[in-house]
Amino acid sequence: MAQDPRITPIIDPGAEAARRRRGRSWAILIVLLGLCALFYAITIVKMAHF
Amino acid sequence: MGVEAGERVPSFDMVQEADYRDWIALLKPRVMSLVVFSGAIGLLVAPGHLNPVLAFTAILCITVAAGACGAINMWYDRDIDAIMRRTQNRPIPTGRIEPAPALGFGITLAVGSVLVMGLALNIAAAAVLALSVCFYVFVYTIWLKRRTPQNIVIGGAAGAFPPVIGWAAVTGSVDLIPLVLFGIIFIWTPPHFWSLALWANDDYRRAGVPMLPVVAGAKETRRQILLYTLVLIPVTLVPYMLGFSGRLYGITAAVLGLVFLERVYRVITDRQDAEGNSLTGDAPARTAFKYSILYLFALFGALAIDRMVG
Image (tube, rainbow over all chains, first blue to last red; front, side, top):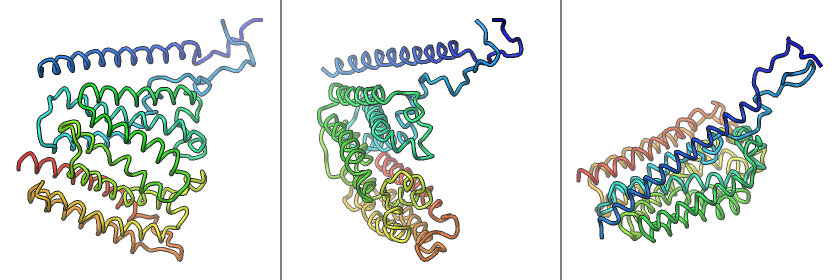
């Protein structure tokens, strides 16, 4: 069937889902890196106390 | 691929996948500010010194645990959240996050924050943190919230734990002073929350949540606000009377308390109908609610400053 040129999707739901997934992945990466840095700092502080 | 004539084009509303902001919303970030502040005050006023990294870790654990409580609360209350206008756009009622992952998220954060607190700080702080999470989830959310108009009174204890946790993180124990700070937040919660509930109880009425104005009426709620405020003022003076703080805190607490009492007096004498419903759009209750937030921040801020300069 020919595509009606008058109807154009404003938002591609696939692209929107991918954008959200990408945002989530970045957020998880940032949280994980933050936790690594925090645990590293805690270890250094704890070791300095002993 | 294109779109055929007559075919429905999915809009933003039809895309139900959650993004990271929905997961953050599960943590009730607005509720966190008081938790972070009062936890930090517990750390600051406690005798002793804590390494800044460990102090940051303690506050982070308190914050994350509070967020976990929010997520578990949203999981449990998803039925009434869908009814109440204020909450119907939350991630679970809108379907952006399924209930089971929300619960898993909350439990993971709660367990993680208690473990990190225990490993990085001490067992006492971790134990009080675990107790506060259990109290909020089991006593307030699951047991009391839908059963009694005293839900806020006893449930308020859950929000009163952070200074005790902060204190325990520094000292490794729980003393009389952190219990007084606990008492201040505990007694402050009912007048603070009921000032809001006086003018925002339609949602609770619709959802069948027995908040005091819904069950006992506005007149009784006003009376209870006054009673708790009258008890609150002397309790805030206990740190000064015990010699834990100096005159700066004592005078500040007295002045802030008297202003709070004046605001509450206006709530009592607001123009009302026979049932005690406001004829002024609850303007005095709105003022008292806003002041109650400022009151607690100023009171605890004065205590911290007094301890630092004293």
